[in-house]
Structure formats: structure tokens, C-alpha cells
Length: 111
Ligand code: HEC
Image: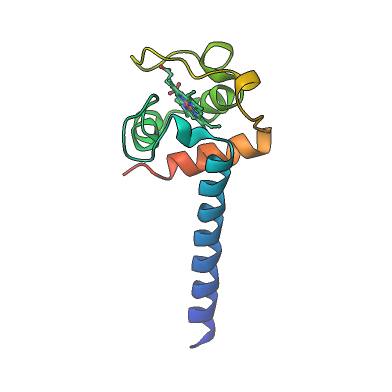
């Protein structure tokens, strides 16, 4: 392996371990109780969310606030679901940093 190949390999490993860590973060925060990456559950699939908000300049701010505070105190209702996303009293707390990482992870799922 030459130097460039080594650097590429390290970069690839780095990227895959970080997105792996983000999946675990989403699982730890119990998001998967209501969401799935591809399937519609109580909440919209993360892929559909990514597609809807891709390229929207307010997406990061808005999704972070919903992730941290739920539908009503956060970004508001955007899907025709009957359910709301509950606020942080009924879910594990998500810090700013964690919310940012989760939004990045979701947006990366857009196909
Ligand atoms: C108790 C069920 C439940 C849990 C737990 C839950 N969600 Fe949701 N989520 C929903 C529902 C229902 C909606 C759709 C609300 C609406 O109609 O706007 C939603 C919407 C969203 C949206 C889209 C917001 C928008 O305005 O487009 C994101 C992003 C999201 N959830 C991320 C998460 C993350 C990340 C977690 C874990 C920290 C999580 N959710 C946990 C039920 C849940």
C-alpha cells in the first residue's frame, strides 16, 4: 500500500466508525421506538425526513429543536401523523452536540 492508499483507508475507516457511533446514539436515545431508517412507524422514516429537508437552510435548526424538545415545543408539526413527538420529559435528554450529530446523520441518509 502506498501513502495515498493508506490515508484513504484511514479516512474511510474513520467515516464508517463515526456513522456507526451515530446509529448507536440514535438507538441509545430511544428514537427507534417510533422511527426506523427506511420504514414508516409512529413517526416518519429517517430517510423520508432527510429527503424532505435536504437543501433547506433552516433544516438543521428546526430538526435540532424537534429532536431536543419534541413537536410542540420544538419545530412544530410537519407530517400528517396523528401522533406528536413527545418532549424531553418523556424521552432521554439530547444535548446540543448530540442533536447536531443526529441531524447530520439523518441528512446523510437522503438518497
Ligand atoms: C414516542 C415516539 C417518538 C420518539 C421516541 C421519537 N420520535 Fe421523532 N417523531 C415522532 C413523530 C410522531 C413525528 C412526526 C411529528 C410531526 O407530525 O411533525 C416525529 C418527527 C421527527 C422528526 C421530523 C421533524 C420535522 O419537523 O420534520 C425528526 C427529525 C425526529 N422525529 C427525530 C427523532 C429523534 C432523533 C428521536 C430520538 C432522540 C426521536 N425522533 C424520537 C415520534 C417520536
